[in-house]
Image (cartoon, rainbow, N blue to C red; front, side, top):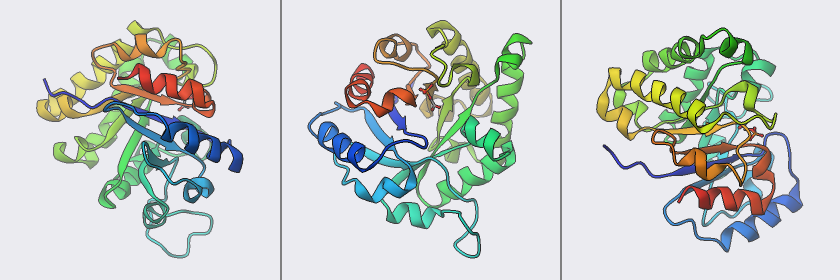
Length: 246
Ligand code: PGA
């Protein structure tokens, strides 16, 4: 099996300010993360305020279009210039607030990868889908849109984040077993497409990951790290979560 580099990304969502940027830069840069890929994804306007060193920068969304007459949108060119190396695409909040479909998400991931950036592609079900017993079918459909867009070699360069919507910001974390079950399904689905790609691809868990539950989640065989929302706004918590991935 391929050894996958552990990965932790902080998603600030629409939070933060100049002083949090300074606090994060100072605190994270005095830590070493021993081989964990650590990424901070602040709101796009704050990207240029970071001088990242021990960590990398990412954005929370991107346009699928080229530079031009698209008011309010931000392109991959712009994100690269601002120092971002990763882009979260298809977060459930964007799918909901902006009606992003699986095809929109695949188009954004395509644009991101073509620009030499790494897409962190989010998938995950709502509570009603889980209660109906349709998790694999639902997540499988989201993955299907990606498999339709990318070759196995391209998919191997992406990062997938499994984020059950019912666990995001609710304090209700999926149990390590629940999360592992879906991660195993995702890897198995992709293994049917290409085994080497599926072994290489990092799959993150997101949804109420905290300093005190991270280690248990990251110890699962198919969980390669986390996408962290609320706890990524507190330096000590985020650092503790990154250390739990070592
Ligand atoms: P949370 O958010 O950690 O606050 O649940 C995770 C996410 O939405 O990426």
